[in-house]
Image (cartoon, rainbow, N blue to C red; front, side, top):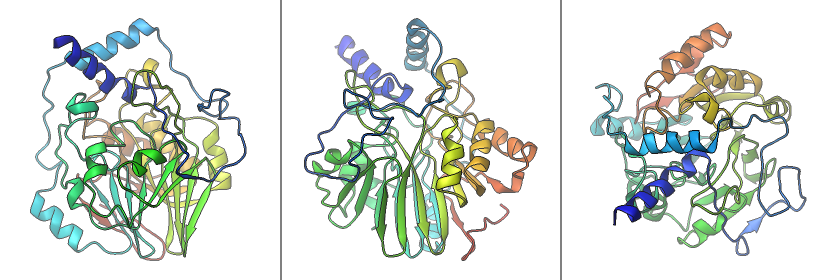
Length: 364
């Protein structure tokens, strides 16, 4: 029994650290790309763009890191003001304007833009792993999957458990109505769970409905939900465009030359939702996650005027202090000329009402 539990725990955390990936059949899903770009591999998998950083360190170092994370019993002290109370969360959500963004923790947002409601990476469960095993969140989600609002679009950046959360996806009550947009290989996950409007995108693919356009954009990361399916589904960020403004959602990513291309071809953006956490030890994480300082650099390179930090303060995936990321993020924004006032840090559950017309962030 102990061996089975340890195996499940290992299976839960390995994908989050880029050691595995997953593949889902695509025969029932509309696939929007017909060419075979350089990030596709000969064995029907995927790889990062040329010039991307790669993980350093031996397999032994990675194993030691994983075991340390699995066996650690430390309790993370959460500041009292880090998570909004349920009543305040509900009050703010009920009064959310268009445009606005509501942070649900980690990379999960409710975005209201151009009269549409968009959900991103709704990980709202207790653990990031299979069958309840894996890293546990230390900051509670302010809402459950069953309580999520009726939305027009669901975006999922990749299939790691802290982004593609099966219990949340299964509990969502509006499966027949929402348009699901995912990277290549992830459509069947949703089809098998009762979703009827599912589109897979390759990098640079567009989907449009009225004034809303969604573009899947390159990211430097990996994918996986098991031990034998490394990088068999694609990972991505997203450009979200309406006549009201544009948002770049980074997904999980490292830094590399491709972001200059994103800035030229897909930018500029009014607002970035950018990952800033889970970056230590650098030897092992440099090929998958940016530091807060690198996150600011990406924001500038894609041409975003301001940014909200995500992928921090929710679940302990790596050993750095989870509350140092937002401090470094704002310091780096000041040092790099973005301006600390344009590197916004919000509480879990907080709604930020944006200025209509230019998506200007209030100076929080």
